[in-house]
Image (cartoon, rainbow, N blue to C red; front, side, top):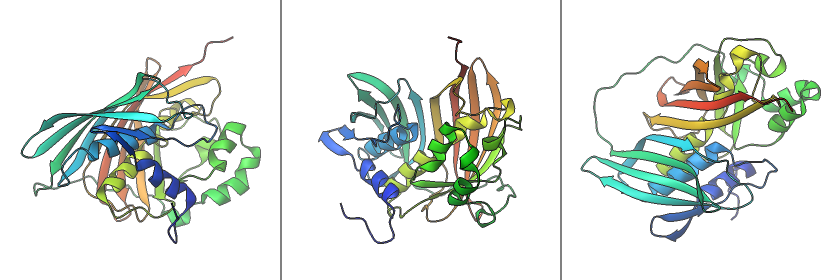
Length: 294
């Protein structure tokens, strides 16, 4: 597939991976990048599962929520098969269940609800007052200034090109072991062009919603997901889509972790447009376990 003018390769690759192959009615296949990582990025599995569900609903139904569980790590060396179950088709709402399968076993399940667009009450919380993304250090500047002294795991994460650009309002967490308040404000934006299509926009928003969330639950403990002494993995993921978003500008992803207990950390997130519209809310619990000593 040719790359449109102004498009970046990471975003083009993501869009192609969201264009699932239809195997049979309600059955689709998706691929993951061969990037040397041990498991498939959870945000990609969420996004592909949502694309599969969206292809099994009427076009006038728009996703308003999803609830997902990660059951096994995804194997990046083989495709993922997505099986869609048509749970309910009502006059206003539609429900679909998706199971992602590899090696004959379920690795992920998701329920998604869709609704026809209709008017109603409207209110939202205000966007936090933080520095604008133009005032913050870009990823290229961050790599040049700090990566030489960073651990190898941090270098690997920040050193590769991604379809989503990230600009945290604070870099302290990545550069020290200081115990911080468990909250983060992170500007995110698509690194390239996102199709003018509600299905792709929702899927890419779901993709980026899985970025940095679990790490926020570790702020209070002076460590991060890059710590080799930790076993870290997403357990579940919930998302509510409040308002449409074209993904053509920066979004502010605010996060806070109200609790960590029982080797699990819980984080909540809100995604705002630059002009302050709340477009989505997110909640996730993940495993944050200290590895047993050898």
